[in-house]
Length: 93
Image 1 (tube, rainbow, N blue to C red):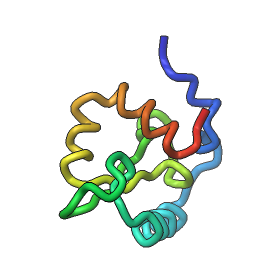
Image 2: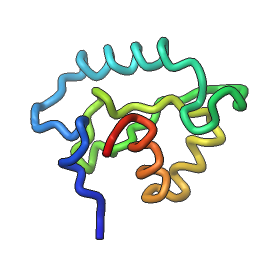
Image 3: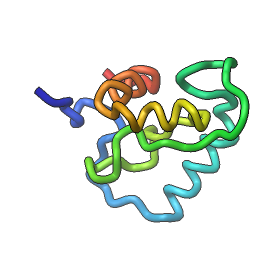
Image 4: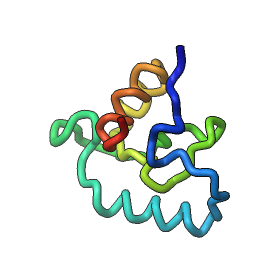
């Protein structure tokens, strides 16, 4: 049983332009100050992560999480488990 991505506010039908995506990336990078998975406990380089992958229809709006390098690699090591956690942290159902 997979995740029903249509339930999430960031599952969009509209085609997203590169300019729209870039604006979202810049906003998240500026506004989200800490790693979404660890709050204030992470130091070092931060990266932006698509919670719902582009191959799954994910767009940038409401779908980007700022993660430290360690947690970003961890998320990719178990995509299904961490995807559900990140969706909840971003306000998904």
